[in-house]
Image 1 (cartoon, rainbow, N blue to C red):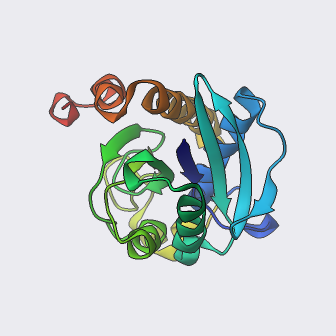
Image 2: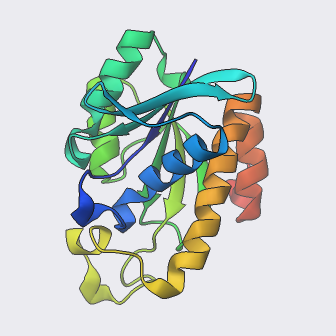
Length: 200
């Protein structure tokens, strides 16, 4: 069984925020695979079913980003899921807007959701599906004055929405690939869409 976690914050005020792009992908996977409605479980909203030939539990933690790890730990413990079978989908400041990259293990990079998951699991060995939101002040990104929490907790501008919708579809396909073929083959396919040095 795989645990697939989309990160975000609960509530209408955060619904379309950059920080909630993990929720977008979880919703897209539930739609694609007819997993039914999300129900309250583990301190989050969960839906389960088959993704291809594998059983998957989709989870959207609902205790706010900084505490995401608690729901992940509860779900993993209940279903006896090892970190290597956990996929976390999250926003990434260090990628250009709408770029999708996969990663196996690593640190939290200042992302509070990842920090909480690492703390609660006691492991960094989970898989990450990273969706670029751009870093303020970075070439091609938003202006530098938009730095900080106000940036990640703001909505995508209308001009970026078509690219974000495409990124959500790509991220969902990446999760499907990870579940079916494993992280290494999936990294080689999806990271190859970026620069060559990101291919393993």
